[in-house]
Length: 383
Image 1 (tube, rainbow, N blue to C red):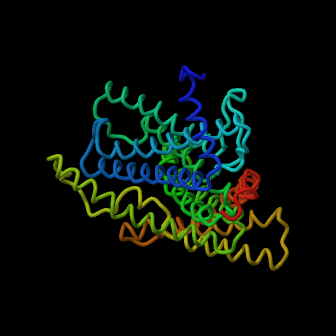
Image 2 (cartoon, rainbow, N blue to C red):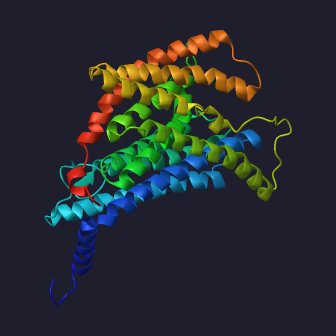
């Protein structure tokens, strides 16, 4: 109001938010901050798992937990800021579709306007905070925490996965830009890398095949094919698999190093019975994804050359990729154990991969359609 100064801060903030909504850099900065947050959480959880193995139980307040929670905080705060910017732009009558992050949706009856990717990423971060408080309460009741699949941990892992899904949606929405394509190729491996942790919740089910291995096959194959169809470019699966390999190598070095250095700094000894074993989380990530990506890429090329129906091509690609992943898992386990793969395991996992891959291909094709429909490509092209 003139002469009183009332409302001036709000007007300034709203004006700043509107300017940010029209800036071509806002979407790129926010998208990469969310990706950085998910990567930080990934390295934090890998470190924490290795700490449990090399040192033992821990309390809530550890450096690995700080890294894990700070990653979620970065992704959550960034998502909240983008929702507020989109809301301010809408109220000012400016187009909100220009923001990266996907089609804006109405939240709470239109009070807020949220780009879909940031809405999902922010929801995951908010759930992570709630489950984090539950984990703190759990520690206060039971003290040291020595298991990965406690109820608060499972909730935390699901929440992080939701944030990672949001990151994929954010980059897929601007796949026509160079940074959007690069971000998608990086955000998908982050989600693949986290798969063994999330599917660990089902490891106790009495199934003929380890549910965690089935989850590995399903999600890794699904995400490779989904990324390929979303970008629509040859070699996408190979690029995703290569990025996954780099992440796996980085975690392979970082996790035991961080656990050892932090233990020394804290004055805590390592376990006496430690064997010369590979780091836990990186060892669970499929190591031969380049082979699966090569199979998927070859089948995609063959489907286009032979004119296969779009109704069956994804399932064929999934069957081939899933079989490759399934076959590779017993080989990977044998290599890490210093033994020879059991022929029966090879056959069982190949068949499991073949069947699971068909489902993965079916789902991947439909998820890719949803990601492409959520695109803001016409308005971001050329940025």
